[in-house]
Length: 77
Image 1 (cartoon, rainbow, N blue to C red):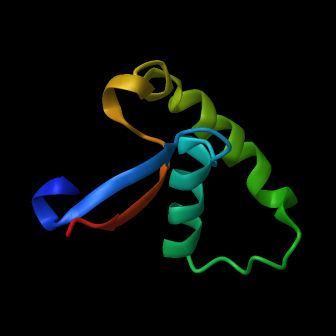
Image 2: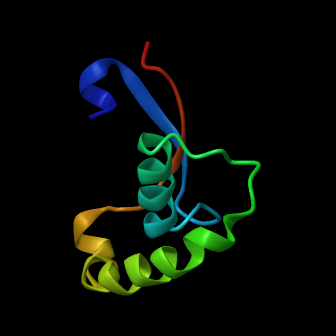
């Protein structure tokens, strides 16, 4: 995809990123317009239930590409 848009991949890192469930959960909390500075105790049960429900996707993580990857690219001149 990068090559087609005129970029050359220099380096790629797929470690040290947030887990895919955490990213999905944070997205749902943003949609809910949650106050991030509040006590999250009321959310923990739903967080854990969601994590369990997410397990089938987690098992397919490599095929579904659910995580975040950091890439360093430069214009392909």
